[in-house]
Length: 439
Image 1 (tube, helix red, strand yellow):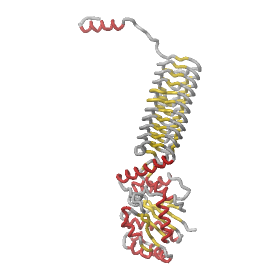
Image 2: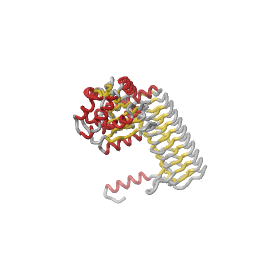
Image 3: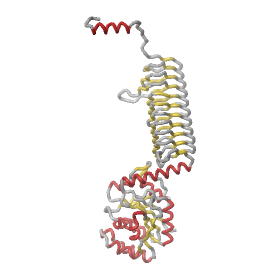
Image 4: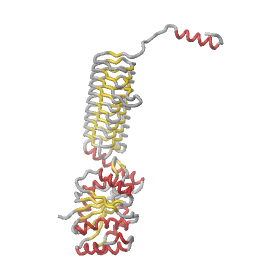
């Protein structure tokens, strides 16, 4: 069986290859498409700069594949098309010498919009022409197609005419071997010029981002997700959303986020690397990161969830509530203007408006624990470390510095004092001062 190898090489936009769009480098889209050909190996010809090699190493690590991906240095950086061709041929020469019947296709790495369907057509054309090496071209590279459409016997004279000479060294033997085998070095021009649009500057990055956004959102729609305004929803490539979930306009969802079925994500929501269960509602202008919302939860509007927060099944979190490193119990409620940090909240707890867990003492973070069924009155400060027992009540306006036992009522505020007639006495005193007299 013939071996099948894909070579990715810099088409002139290696820096933009590493630009992150929809949560992954643009070059990762090309690598994914190449892996879709099920090759025996993928060879990546990096630029000569250390930053290019480091960028490719990180990019390759982020792509899941059962096939080996090898990073090869290109030697001196090439800017013109023909020297770039030299770099690719230098990389594939040892493969062709060891496996003369190997199929090799070469793809510019700065073409993030190239599809798996196009690459499969490239491979079919490669086989039909009996080529040993076929380059993907198209769009602005029509001139390059003319350079590459040559028999192998013509390859060495072409290369020898363009220095550096050491890059061409050894190609005479390669050309002779290919000629004897009746093989060719050829090209396949992509019929869809948009797919081979080179991404080499900020303008092209924006165009590619818009097309990748369209593809992602269409894939979600085909899976049953309802996007009310696909043009304004930016959803990372790795995001998965269940069917019948409705995504409203101006939503940003990033990272390996998972969202269950039958939910609703309202406008101006920003979700990062979080997991949402089924039938979850995220109301307007809510922000979350590294957060878990279990099934049948409702949060927002204007809520913020910082990392390591979990909101349990059926809970409600309302406007201007912030949570950090908190486990908020099933069916519990915190509907207004509260901060819960480093907290564990049991089932069925009511957290009144304006409640604050004072978790930082200037040196370390301290935990707050609230037992199931507890009631925390409005305007309460819970000075951690502190525990409120199961079913306990904390009176509104209290500052709790000691543990509250289960079933108890805790009142920690100054006694109210009323002074009748105080306002009139104060007014007379001010009048006397203005006249220069004594109060």
